[in-house]
Image 1: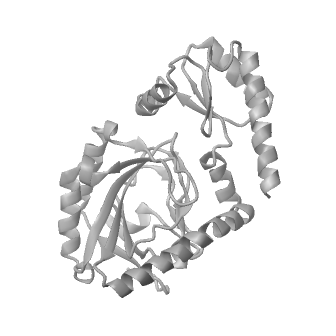
Image 2 (image 1 turned 90 degrees about the vertical axis):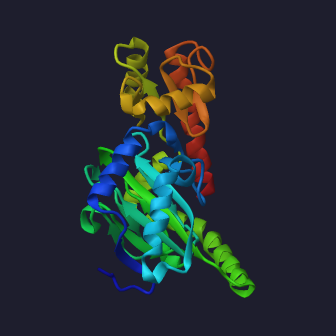
Length: 306
């Protein structure tokens, strides 16, 4: 299948369904190999990522061999491959440019609800249910219309593999590609700002991506956790709860507690700022007031930028 656009957009086969299932199982049994991504383009990402050539070299090698057998891609090199894991605590990805000659987005599973990779400037969204497990979206990475992101996951876990392809170039083509990339990354913040203002779905999604929604780490049977969450609800403050008893959140919570040097609950993080019991606040009332003040500060800052 090919959708006719000025940029390349094709459904290609990379893995069989059986191979994709084996990869999904391998990912699931090696969650420690995935970490929250740091940044990309103009925004911080919130998905779990694993660089395959370092963490799963056998999968990376398999991908390279599969791509070599595709005639139109035989002159291109795999410069990067990464597994992406979307969960309820890391549900989506902000819009960005990859900036490579081609990107291959491989759909590893479809047993989840929501999500999908959206291309607003093309007015199209790629879903695993449409492309098929083991198949992939091949698209041009250096076209203006290649600006894309991932919609929020509603339930389950979504796995994809992102592969970057680049062709060996002579000096002239390298210079040309460099300036083309400069243009793409220069206009990216402008497009992102416009889209957030005019697209409610993206705007709501990026409230979390841009770290303006408190993330509350709590556990069942914790009265202080319940007290803080109830006060936030009474104050009409939207927040995202991470249940530390949930096995799916073990890696996230372990990473967070090590980074902040505390495993006391309830703990709250908003962007890069953490609110920790005994460190940031002594009582739940104090903690809620601090959160309110910080959210107001963020709101004032955003209004000033607009």
